[in-house]
Image 1 (cartoon, helix red, strand yellow):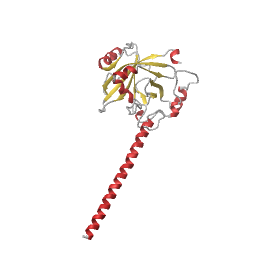
Image 2: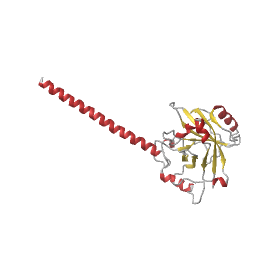
Image 3: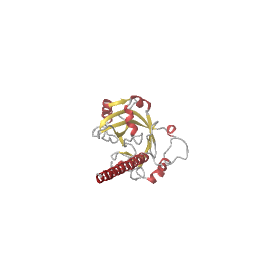
Image 4: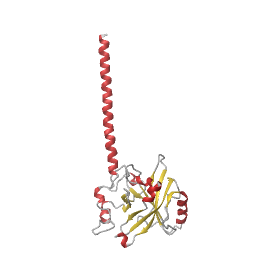
Length: 252
């Protein structure tokens, strides 16, 4: 009986040790997971050295796109949606997968970058241009785009800016559409002079969950901002705006 008691005590100690090690490993893993998540969302913000190059709409001594492109020649514009955290440089890679996991400096980043589709011209001269970004929590990257499906949010956020090296466009947001990633109308670039803008606008009007009248017509240049949405990998939300070249007074 004495030997049996000693054996049971040893077994208890061994089991307690295994349980202790298990919980210690889980604690370490939880700490790592929290650290890793924090790093991902930190990477989703604009790096401080890049933010200093953000072009401004007013004042002198503005940073130039030449300075920004010296850091990364793939930068083609800067996007701002007013009163939201969406305030990022736009890059255009050699294909549409290059910046899925690269930040604006070209370094690896799970949050990727905001990027213009490879089939669009980088001067946004196409009839219809598409810009992509990851849907991140905590309003990072294009995380706020899904908020535009809400009537109040859509009403309170009608505008933004698209700043290019040689001009500035005012963005007039006129629609929000929930769509499939394989939608061949919404995800097909329309080059300048395509003559298909009217059909696109009719399709948007028929499928929009939110919309407003901003005087958009077949002569307008259209910009779509696209991100993932929902549990399905194919669900997308597009926020669609009219591009209007800003006057000198508006842009400076």
